[in-house]
Length: 366
Ligand SMILES: [Zn+2]
Ligand SMILES: [Zn+2]
Image (tube, rainbow, N blue to C red; front, side, top):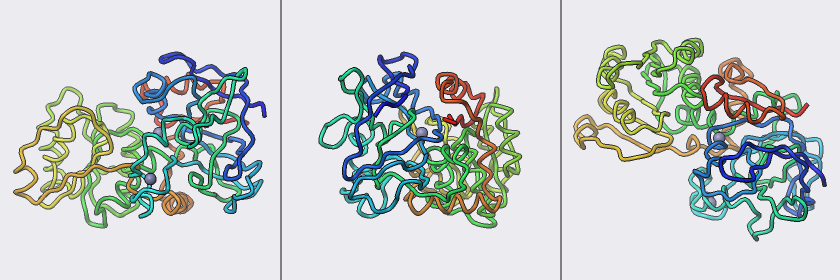
């Protein structure tokens, strides 16, 4: 079938919206009319060839929409059902079998090869293959092929124009607080970096009843939003030494944070987050580049922990309905992070995400 898709033809190029031929759904595949798709820094990393993906490719990995057709082997959804797409996984390795799909051992191939497992492409342009399985979905397009592995059904009236932004960074930040680390009433939390991941963490910490929530960033408007979403104290790091920032967290939490989360990817900031922990505290981080330098005693003497967290350490099938429920009860107002753009403005949305002007751009196809 003919679809409209945002294609990356060359590394670093702008995405070009054009007509592409999408394959018919195979037995295990689901054809979805995309209704909304979130934009994330990972899309831009792929665009700039900082990820192992080869153009031509259709990007987009936070899709959602309405099922149009389902292959004969599909049992979980039928035409008319509404779904969120999640990152794909192999379903066969040990972490996948344990339900810990963000830690899939085959994640690189599943996410970035951009074809079906048998190597066949899902899309063509003028008879030539276009990679259309980025994160198992390639959802910068009017239609997308997915499988039962990487969808989560949502209620008929679910506001996808917000929710499409839930399945990557927001889930990561929320899962870090609600699943990966011991956040509970009476505990103190610090969050370093208040983009989509960090702000989701602030909301989730507030929903968990954390006593003190300290948000740390160098962008004033993000810190204002953090305060609106539940941060009890904000620290603007502009022009400040990171050692001072750690010391301020220790002071305002009355001895250090029980839980810290770094979302900045900077080893220096991860170090500052560890040094802001209370005795027996836990620091998590969701990404990083470069080497982390930390005296072992910073962890050992106070029984502190440092752990890496992928995808919020959650199983999307179980966790996303929980987030939607928190949202319905007004305890996870993630709509405040979203600005909608028409699909035609995909390049503007990517630019606004990178500049930090918008926390979570979501493209719509209405
Ligand atoms: Zn993402
Ligand atoms: Zn796996």
